[in-house]
Length: 568
Image (cartoon, rainbow, N blue to C red):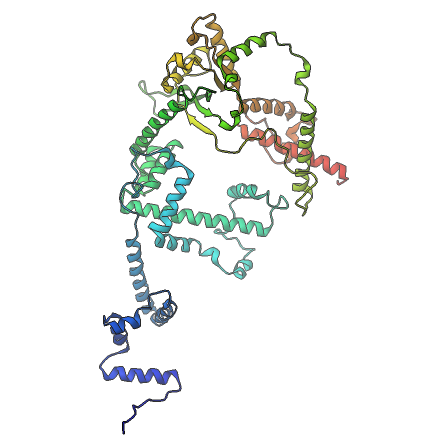
């Protein structure tokens, strides 16, 4: 009779483990040697048994085993040092294995300054490069740095609520940055003053954005330090910093720490971009592009000084009087239904000739019924917006009075097609300078004078430029040559300059005199708001002037609303 094999009966896990260890010891092996041999032996039977340890199916139990080894290996101070050294070596292995692809873009991360294109500086292109760097090229290093930077804001809500009264440098909102962030989010808030939850949310978003930018920048610096041909961020920063006026000494230090390229590389990239810009200007103002309606030419004067700190007889500071401008190609949908003959030179000359006998009456300047209705709706929307922002709140999204004024001939919202001219060392402050500017523009467009002056050309400028153009046109009359008569050029006052002049006139009219205490000008409102009221904002500070006008207008509406509501 065949004898049955012995099957021990165990009730506890300890008994099972002890029995297995005894069997392992009979074969002169330890548990460590057994596990090592089990995982490294290449026999097909053992390979099948351990094949799922590194897969998604068996990773949960594998991770539990690793965590158990970690707990065992970090019980003492000496063992913790050994464990950290092991983890550090593994982290070094992963970090060293990650790097951007070698080669020329788009097959690699190298960007040549001699072949760089303007699309390289587009927001979408930059975001794509950053995303590829942190998700494909160096994700391990990025996650490691981000985890360290975001360690403070990943605490439990209880810990953060207990420390609300304490000052925390890492979570507090800087006074300089908070004004910008809160101003951008006041449209979504029910009141102007944001609550604690809103401030905490804004602070968290800012910290996450800052951590992402810091980690991404460090990854780009490390990749550039390892391989100088992984230079996408450095080339981008070099050109941007040069345009922002960063000195060569500071740029050399930034290049040393891996943030920029050499100044020579930035100048080479700008030279390449300049050649591309010249070709685009020539394309935008080619003969075929000017057939129906030539693109608008917008110009303005600019004065800049080359300052020399250590002056001598040979080297002194010098002031340059120049002109900058751009070509603005109109949206084709705006003139799609128009007759091309209406923009011809014959129609333009006929309109100028007919304007001599045009009778001007006061009714031309009076608003129509539709314009009066629009103005009334605009005032109502302003009152409603001030009411909902500063005085009352509403939970009804469908208000009887809209908070936004009605649109006037609204066009499609899209990025304008603008191409910059090369800076011209000729000022538009005199008639002679206007002539030099026109000569320089013709030179940049690669057109002949006959081709340029054969089509109607609309130009945009300020009042001084318009007067100087008319002065030059008057000096050349009469002329039988279209190149000298300037008969094809029609100057328009720029919308920005017009708004600029009108806003300044209104602002100065109501500002008053702050030296007279009985004066009730708008300077008192600015003083009550804590804004500078010693003198009006300078004309060149266009943003500050319009902001002051808007604040004064809002305060006036608030006062009127409180007066009508009987609120003291």
